[in-house]
Image 1 (tube, helix red, strand yellow):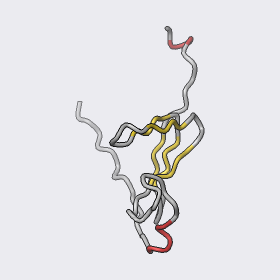
Image 2 (cartoon, helix red, strand yellow):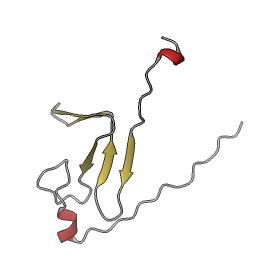
Image 3 (tube, helix red, strand yellow):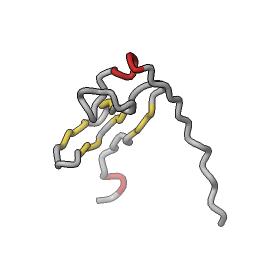
Length: 83
């Protein structure tokens, strides 16, 4: 299939939200350790627990608010490869 014939697919994005969960926007398949699968369609999102307090792990149930979870992750600037 040529590039021109391929349908355009939205990229997957993974965003750690300040003081909260991790948003994963599809299309992506989330697979747990026992093989359970959740399909996240293109344009939809799931929110994964980052604080460890959720009763619905791996998904967020907003327990981080009551737990006082704080984290504001910023990725370092990419290092350019020497060529």
